Amino acid sequence: MLVVPAAIGLAFLVLPLVALLARVPWGQLGEILAAPEIGSALGLSLGCGLAATALSLVLGIPLAWVLARSGGWHPVLRRLLRALVTIPLVLPPVVGGVALLLLLGRRGLLGQYLDAWFGIQLPFTTPAVILSETFVALPFLVLAVEGALRGADLRLEDAAETLGASRFYIFRRVTLPLVAPGVVAGAVLCFARALGEFGATITFAGNFPGVTRTMPIAAYLALETDPPAAYVISLVLLAVSIAVLVSLRDRWVGGLTG
Amino acid sequence: MTTPALDAHLVARRGDFRLDLRLRVPRHTITAIVGPNGSGKTTALRTLAGLIRPDAGHIRVGDRVLDDVEAGIHVPPARRGTGVVFQDYLLFPHLSAAENVAFGLAAQGLPHREALERARAWLDRIDLGALAGVRPGLLSGGQAQRVALARALILDPAVLLLDEPMAALDVTTRQEVRAELGSRLRAFGGTTVIVTHDPADALALADEIVVLAEGGVVQRGVPAELVASPVNAYVESLFAASRGGIA
Image (cartoon, rainbow over all chains, first blue to last red; front, side, top):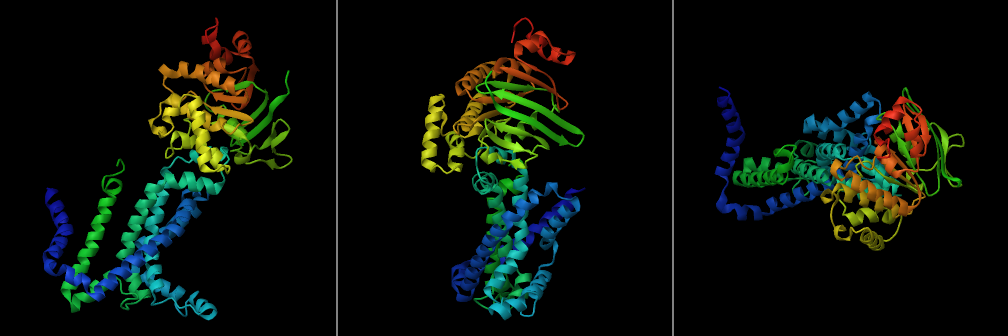
């Protein structure tokens, strides 16, 4: 009896993608991708996605390290820290965008000083795209790396210490290599999430061609003006998602034994 | 009697548990700390290695003070010059055998190439040259033990600590590996402390045995003494199998 709803559920997940593939103007694929607006959205998306991933690595690995080592802390503090890191996973991205605007906007909590002291205005710029994407994608990296750190045998750090290694040397030569698979998985997930970011980006960074109009935004807009272009952009984003899934198949789809 | 190379009074508390152990290990000798799980022997070893700060007491090696709680001295593990062979050996799984042996030299600033060369030469000397490029996962228990020992000894430690060196080995190879470890420790000739739950290890390897239970010393002495005149039934049962000279 469970087979019927299960089949409907699966169809519900797969059929929309089939519909997309059916409507993609395969013959014009190259032509549409070569169009300047699409090309610039694609380039912007890739660049910002990579920058957001890099920023997430720089900030997220130390954050994951602290989370993984918080075992000795007060349980309330530990849970609070974890909840704070997890918020962007469950928060509607638009809310993230509004919040970023209120922090870093021209009259925002920090933004007013950035403007007054340094003349820096972040909203509706390419850096704003990167920050929006980092905000929503960072937790993916932190949680993946933290999981890897928890699984690693930390007694190896003791062993390295008795061999005369400094804390930083141990981190670089022992800890980081041990969790490298987790870092790679986290970075891929983070990049995929950044690439698909829509709500926070359009709220905090807006929609300026070549500056903040990333692929998801371009796809949304094209749906009204140039549907085939929207289908092609969607196809590219779908291809990236599938590539992510394939690259992580052992880790996520194959379960823990992979 | 030579002056003790290692002179320690270890006091460590963990909740209700209290370790109180005096240890004097003369130069060039091997002392084994024998005790059941929960006797405090691993705490003692981790304290000697500097991984745990003692709550009271001191640790001196020669004239060098590594810990002195009253004076507020604690030398961190990286600067104690204490070599450790850990339980399960804890070889770095992502590095080859040679890179494992070279790790300490490189960590202390020797150029990577030079460290690797010295590590390879060391492995050659202990007949493991052929396995220099192999990851620890592919080594047998006995081979892993020798690599772990080489990794510690290449730094020329003043004191060598071994934590349950035989526990990771299967019974069939244990005797052979134990005999070989014994001869390597004799060749090292430094001050050595072995922590083990297995009295057979202690009898085969140590010059002096300290029997530890619930954080305190039950009896200490040379192996023959403990076998011949145990102070209580527990010590007697530990070494019962060895009566009649079968070690």
